[in-house]
Length: 413
Image 1: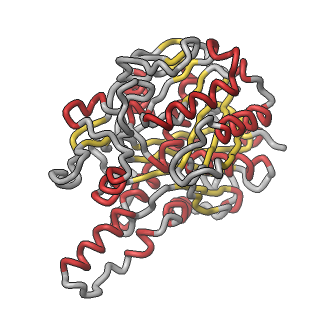
Image 2 (image 1 turned 90 degrees about the horizontal axis):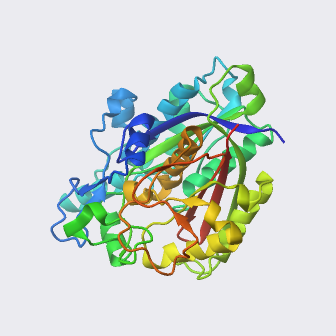
């Protein structure tokens, strides 16, 4: 099996439109929550979200790409192009058939779909649809357009596993490169879910926070008063590359991917297993593949969305895996700052995990005023302020509706 490293990063997120800005705001413990500007929230229970600010697609997209793409695809192209430039890969470095693209999204082109349906109803159900409706809406168009833009002719598809999507994508890319099926793969995820459809749907499920008066502190994983997640938008991209090839061309190497795993809860369409058995087994599989012991993991970026049930199920899974090593493990739930990007969450959290390794910094979990008493006292939750710590190994968890669990392990080279 070949070794796999990360050589490029790109991000467009609520706290920054490039990696440096994003990471600096994460370390500073800033909240990305603002009142929703994308539609009138008067009749909605939740009136805030973590929106991308000052997005200018023209920095990385031409006018034709903008016209023919949904917002989630624009986030894909933007972050992927940034990562590709950061890595310095192109069809001049490898054969076009040796570079692939695997992308992920939970909802795909829902912005386009919602707008087209509104127009259909507004026009008395006259079937006058945009000719770009289908290509703008389908989830796989993001990986296709990234490949078209850069001429990458290798492995290309879209993965969908709800909020576990991005980690699923990273695992797939990792495995293809290990097997010698590609020299490099652009992997990531994006989402543009701040819409009436999404907000209304999640409100109906009672999954989202309705703390409209104190929205900056509404995303509060592990706080006893958490009342649901805060939705976010954006995308993140990683360039994964075969180690020897990257080394030979003198590439900048951020870290190595050493383990990844997926499991299924096979339990409920939206709720995790109460004791976190699926998540804990997945974490163990990822560590086994990485040939690491739980005691060797320095940092864990958990799924931790700020829901009353989900946070504690994952805590139980972490207890099961790390046991007596809990005090050595630093945990920070960064959705407290970014909100929950659904299918794009794992991608930006992978970037956070990688930057924790390169900078030896653990970012904080913000908004913890009263730690849930069900969380073990020996568990080290990094609260409200970043800390300096040597980070050799970082694990990132992502879980999704349908019972999907996806875990990725990164290691300092």
